[in-house]
Image (cartoon, rainbow, N blue to C red):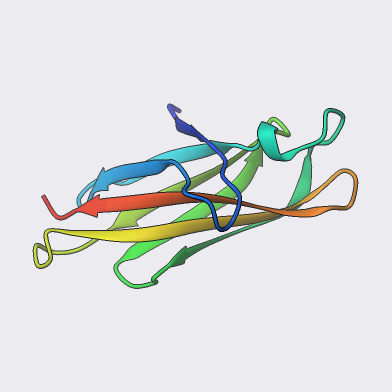
Length: 111
């Protein structure tokens, strides 16, 4: 499976911008290496949320290789408006018992 990979951002900072079309169902992954300490890995408790909620759905949220979180996005606006902007927040627990959050921005184009 091919993943579109972007680096993680922390809440409150402008994160990377993902883009997709409404008709596409795409799998993305966020590289969380910059959020983790050198010997720390993602241990579980991976939960994804998209805001504002609505026509875009986030599914199959999971850890990959201890440093990445992967997820599938589907849906979006039906043409009016021409696009919608969203924030994706992924929280997870690490091997050092820390709870971290990675953030990315999403723009979904109707066409």
